Length: 187
Image (cartoon, rainbow, N blue to C red; front, side):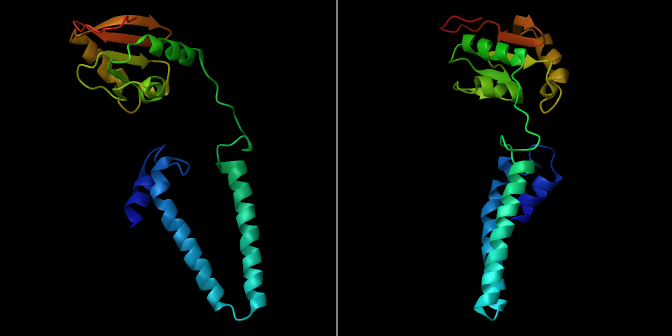
C-alpha cells in the first residue's frame, strides 16, 4: 500500500521529496506498525528472558540515539545543528502590510511563497486562474520563476489588458482586475 506514496516522494522535487514534509505522512502508520511487528518477531526468536531484556534495552538506546540525531541534524527545531532562524525580508513585511489592504471578499492569485500572507481570505489560489480580482507577485523570490512560472505567464496575462498595475516597488507587483467593483476600499 505504501509503494505509490513512497515512489511519488522518492522521485519528486522538494518539498515532496523532503522527509519532513506533510507529503510523507501517509507512510508513518505503516512504518510504526512494521517496527512494532518486527520487534515482536525478534522477541519471539529469543529463548530466555535475559536475551529478551537485552534486546529491549538495545531498542531503547537505539530509539534515544536516533531521536537525538534526528533532532540535532534533521528536524527543524532550535536544537538543530546548524539552526538558522528564518529571516523576514523587507519584501515579506511589505507583502504582509499590502495583503491587509486587499478587500477580504476579493479573489487573489499569487505565488506559493506569498500564499501564506493572503490565505485567510475566502478565495486564494497559488497559481493563475482566469479573472481573479487581484494578482500578487514578487519578482525577487525564487518562486516567481518556479512552480507556476509567473515570469513566463504574467506578461502574457497583462498583455490581454484585463489588469491594471496598482503597486510596483522592489519587485512586488499587484494588479487589479479592471471593471470590477468591490465593496470595500482597495489599494
